[in-house]
Image (tube, rainbow, N blue to C red; front, top):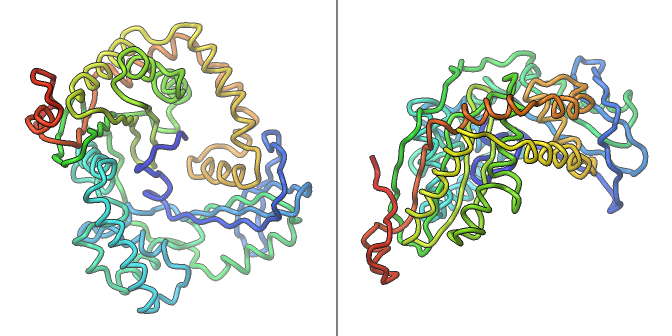
Length: 406
């Protein structure tokens, strides 16, 4: 999955952790690695790649549930649990973690990207657990108790919600013993609160969050493709062409190169257990926010109507297949990918099949996926100065103002 700042999937929707024991030595590409399904003597399951080329062991693990399991009136419980390295929940440790989280939340009140992210999720998922901030709020974090955290641990942390990926210089028998020692005492079954599947709010919608900063931040997006959708790869390729391909993307050429409206603009697919989004972001001069929004909106609508060209499709396929080698060139990267594939419920041989899945996407598939993604327009959040203040600060009367809230 493409990375998008302030929308961290695993942190938001699963409790995850990792460790790496290594010497400072280079590691080879693991793109063609043999992935084993290991079951420890105690029944702990893991995806495992044994590699003895470097003295390194990388492990990543996650407990599904995450922030979606927070009490509705106390967002942030799962985040506090994940931030503690001890299950004892000593008062001094809890207070220290609470203080750190509160400091971050105070910083977020003046951070345009944080404000835009939070508002976007509120619009996309009203009255759903996905609308709640995974880190909590200034109101909720101070009242989270040790009892709340113990209840969360009791409900969520169990062997049946556990996913593990291990890559490195360890034999299966030794790894099985280590897994049992580390995770064997966990309860067998979690007691998760059911979370309903939800489709993100229908575009177009716009919201404005006032903040006195020189540059206006724009977050935009809409309903996406679930990871198990048969047309997901077509949408993934489309997203690369539209906004995920860096300097080669359509949005970058249209917004940055042709019009000089922003230094960067990008878009990513974001998928969770119960919903999916496409989300983009850019920053622009306050008095040019309207121009930037118009350029983005016109380009996504044009792509929805026409889809990619055959050349764009072929180039995107070639890039996505070739870049896989670089994305899996260390033990840690491979372990992270294997954990994500488990969370996404993909088959253990997905890496072997990935290139063929990419190659199978036709131009018609890509055009249909583009229409599904972008034909309705955008959910948009603008964070910055009020329109009048923006015009006065730049001395540019008559420039298009940012949109007002609905």
